[in-house]
Length: 173
Image (cartoon, rainbow, N blue to C red):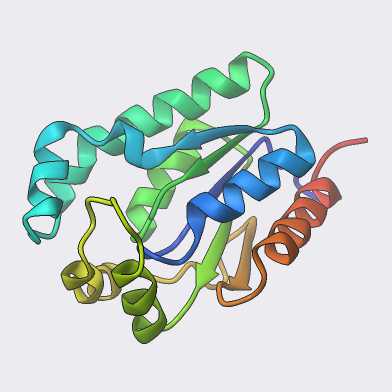
């Protein structure tokens, strides 16, 4: 029997396309988008804007808020799609503890592609200088349960379609 997925987290380093894939996935599936960056406290945004990587302590309250958002959305009968870097296993485990049956879509790409994308992204607080720290912190979710790994250089609509089909395959009928 396939384990059901109640919510999705679109994860990966900055510049991998989390928001774009989430938007396309929600548009095609009627899911509810939760933009993880919107829940960063002002101090985290200030640090990142200044090119200072976040520590585990900096991320703790943010992850708690995201866990609460996911839990509330599922309790309200929504099908949430959260964008969250979820770089470390312990971050993903915190989200899994909050919402049993959460699935992860890992948008994988190289540091070079991430740096190019972030440099070309106007108006975002995350500078390209933090790319290396993101890859240093990344513990790829390879082999973790309910995890789909996708090549982030693919077409956004195709990535959303693949993620949508995978989620549907894990939805009780």
